[in-house]
Length: 476
Image (tube, rainbow, N blue to C red; front, side):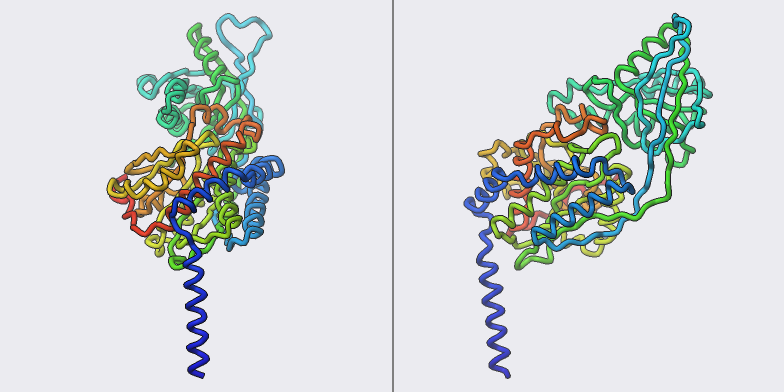
């Protein structure tokens, strides 16, 4: 009995030891093999086509979102990953009719009205079914609105603030977006507080194709009023007409906020070896807005994260730590998937070695951004060398990334990473009817998979601790 037990124990130890020995770790050869295998595969682009062409839009709580959950889960099971569907309660907002017409303005010929192309914002209130007719107050900054807020009562307020495409062209798309999107986020609430009947914002994006850009607005505790984004061209037209004299609009938007829906994050684990209880997340968000198929925001990034598992399976590689794919749900409607995950794993946050999320479109990746301490920077030199042949060797350190679904984990001290992407044209299509598969370059998808696979593998095999993220000490 004792002999047999010791024999079995020894066999188990040898099996485990051989498994550990078979993990090549962060050698130049293994990193090159992972990079090159990813660059030779169209698996991720094929999964992107499945998400966009076969399912289409995937707003939280919708049949499309449910179909996407099943599709990703099935694909990961087929690769041999351990799949878990993590329950998440999500908002369920649906748009209805949305039309606008300029019906009175100085110099208007008899019988003429001009159509305004617009789309309701998430959380928007609704007009009566027949719409509402009201004068328009055009402002170009928060300061101007505050100075003229007494004029807002009983009117439709338009915040006509342009997106700085020149800044985006020079690598500053994020700051340009942050400046303009503040009006989408807070403008309607401020208008409601001043007694406005409705609020409009100029679409947040740089391409003037007369397409509207939707997105979330936040009323807080204020009763929502109808809120919509108008195209850049229509915002500019309304500004010009308002300079001529009084301007009146007929507006109809009839969205509905339905009861919260049951949904899921898709979690797919590629098990580690001797540090399997530690986790490296690689992720993107699975939901999209309803105007198009969300190819850039965020199906391409979910598909690239799926490509990490496919790359490692193809090479039959298991890292020391578990690599965990997460396809987050309801990022667009408030980050409920990320918040739910952080809550569920609150007691295991110390086991999260690092987390990666890509949510910046399918532009070419030029490297990596990370919320790590300065002392950790030399650790990434071998990874930078491995990514140099594909021109993705830049490493940019930040105290805090603030990436949507990882925000709670980052605040809890988990070092966070994201690809450093060319976003110069990302906001042309972001949250618009034009965010479709044809906008995505398959070669860029392969590059995303190569960066994410190399980074996830590297993190999962690091011997040295990264330390907790600097964001853990940032007060908000």
